[in-house]
Amino acid sequence: MLAVEEMQKELCRKYDAEFVSSPINLKVGISLNVREGEIPIHGLRHSPVGDTTGWYIYAGEELSVQPDLFKPLHVEHLDDWCPQVTKYLGLAPGWRFLIAGDYEDVWFDESLLC
Image 1 (tube, rainbow, N blue to C red):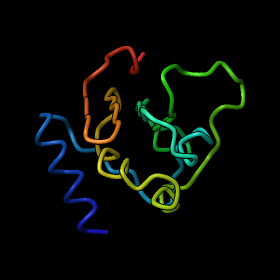
Image 2: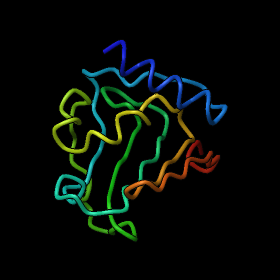
Image 3: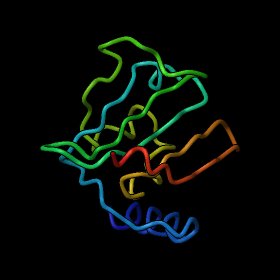
Image 4: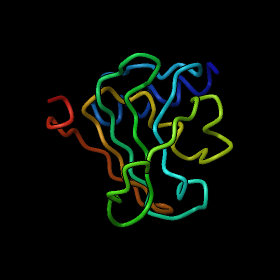
């Protein structure tokens, strides 16, 4: 776990972002198409509430409007679904990422904090 946290901190330093942990016992919201391997993969972090990290992760060109799009998943199981997103989970609320193969975009979106 220490290696994962260090990788997350390194990514935060790269983007000059605050590090906020995503403990393995908390949950993310994730769409099923992430597990199916669809790309690109999007991640966005709201402020954590209750037993969640604040992370919402989905795949595809556009965000679906399905009311049940996001399924709860403990962080500890995320490697089984999509191991490439783990390094982004240390980004603080307000941050987003978009990945597709070797492509990576990471940016701050203040609207996520409202």
